[in-house]
Length: 75
Image (cartoon, rainbow, N blue to C red):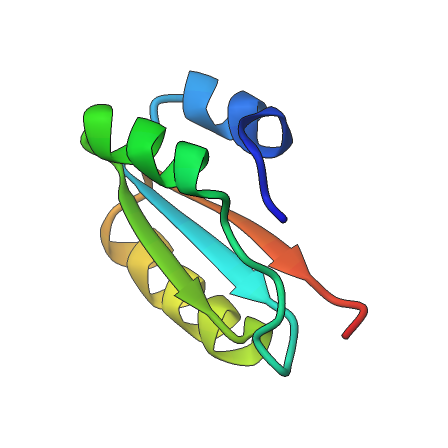
């Protein structure tokens, strides 16, 4: 489960979008409390299997450099 402490450093950098790679089977989830905090801060959350999350990150990072990401790799 991805919690606030896992992404705090990214949020301090002023990101506008947070992309979470959930591993290939999509098992890694973002906690409800983190989802609420992101919404309160106006930060868009994208949760996808890691391969797709990396593709989206690369695409968005070229267009909007205020993108942060965390990729779960072990599943």
